[in-house]
Length: 201
Image 1: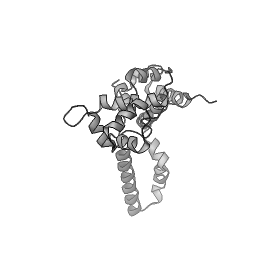
Image 2: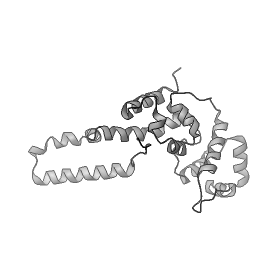
Image 3: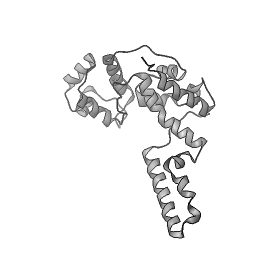
Image 4: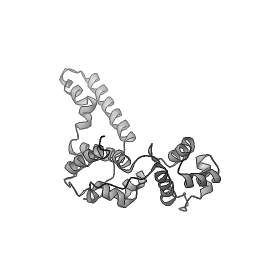
């Protein structure tokens, strides 16, 4: 059976290379932000970033923990905590059902997804293992650091560097079209993937 931590270990190795802090990633990354986005407690994020393993939690326990995490970390516009009644309305159900969910840890997929989308949480927020959730949250961090290390990387991936190499054979109109295309791709990419946050060096 394959090691469930292997994908995360690969990402951590790459982050160690990119940050120059292998084995010291909690110092290099914004641990609080990673916790906020994944629903994983800060201490567990630190352990996983350090290459550690965490006790395996059952699915029901994980779902309950993530629901409680939302209540503790997400606030209404006025800064107050969401009540169970409010969370139930967001999920499209009743307080009684939400209370049952907290006891059993087994929500309906539809209600859990409504809650997840309302708070802008990633797919699998309620059910992903800690290492899986963290691995997913670290992907944009890796992409951002790789782009910083090699600004032309994303352009090569899009094929724009190859197109630019043909510039000597292009007329002024073709060059203007290519420049417009490049600007459009960069703007769309920036909108879809805003820069990931990292802790100050």
